[in-house]
Amino acid sequence: MRPACHARTRPRTGVRVPSSSSAVNSAVRSAHVSTARPRNTPETSGRHHPPKTSLTPPPGAGAAVRHPDAPAPGELLGSHYGQCFGCGADQAHGLHLEIRAGEGVDVTAEFRVRPVHQGAPGLAHGGVLSTALDETMGSLCWLMHTIMVTGRLETDFVRPVPVDTVLHLSATASAVQGRKVFTRATGRIGGPDGPVAVRAEALFIKVQVEHFTDHGRDEEIKAAMADPDQVRRARAFEVNP
Ligand SMILES: CCCCCCCCCCCCCC(=O)SCCNC(=O)CCNC(=O)[C@H](O)C(C)(C)COP(=O)(O)OP(=O)(O)OC[C@H]1O[C@@H](n2cnc3c(N)ncnc32)[C@H](O)[C@@H]1OP(=O)(O)O
Image (cartoon, rainbow, N blue to C red):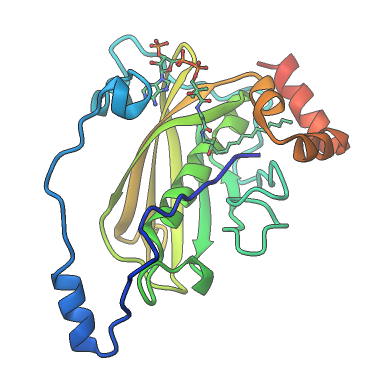
């Protein structure tokens, strides 16, 4: 049940489509690239959170703890919501991640990049790769029996990921402090021990189920609450925080 929005900021009007590869090259070369560093202030970010260091667990943060009723190691976690872009089976263009529990507070998953996930020709879109990492880290909530949402996510894109590549994902929760859960993830290509193509660190914030019911669009919330399986899961979270 997570919102996934992509705002297109580039104006569509007045864009010339180059007709040859040399025209493409010159269009690329002449693109204006700003070197100004964005300021991260309450005015520009909307919130007053320290940027980089907030992904590093502070001294005194505790270890993430595997819930006694967490899925067994190797068990498929299943989708939390059929329409989820990351794990839902009902999303035609979604990532269809099937995520498995690890032995600690960790998970693994595989993601095959499809043509609908392209950014550059033949290559996965970086935002899609971030989504795969985000979803994998978000699924750690099942191992801790807590509900959490992404507060901050930082991705390193180390290698390009071609279409049809299987990205071998793994994620772990490194620490917990109050409502903050510190996580990290990697995506490898060529096998589970292959070279790292993408990696991320993220800060998840524990929330109550009202985070979704208060803010989600009514029709989806009503449908989700009418689904007995969703209700069972939401209740399980509330009685086993
Ligand atoms: C029916 C139900 C079914 C349920 C299904 C479950 C599905 C799960 C799906 C998973 C899908 C996959 C996952 C997805 O895609 S989840 C979708 C993407 N994420 C969101 O939409 C979240 C939107 N943001 C919010 O709602 C609020 O900002 C939240 C809830 C995150 C915090 O607002 P809230 O008012 O509650 O808390 P707070 O502001 O007092 O902050 C608390 C603490 O956290 C620290 N902090 C906060 N933000 C940041 C930041 N950016 N950098 C650094 N630090 C940050 C903050 O400093 C403070 O620290 P401290 O002062 O305590 O030290």
